[in-house]
Length: 141
Image (tube, rainbow, N blue to C red; front, side):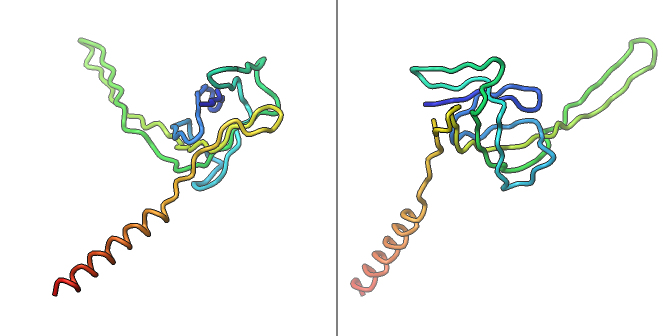
């Protein structure tokens, strides 16, 4: 399974194709848009690894933005004893949910790609089962 280590929002993330991760909010992009991360620090799989100094030029990771949102409220309470001084603040960190679709190597080859799930087959199976149930009811009468 191939992976890549990307840098965004001042943090580093280890990502795999098809994985959904929560990163620092990307203000410029709207949901359902495609993203490209070009600051790749390393990529590889079980057998080989390529490490940049500090980044690998030419390598990139493609992802889709799912949503922008806010985390739960974190309360910050400060108190100075015997001073009758207290302060209570709250903070909600903004984030972006992304789904990694492809990981490219430095020469442009696809290292890893998310698997497509075919849902149309499952829908057809459900329709066939409903037809069978109705046919059995008709023959029983």
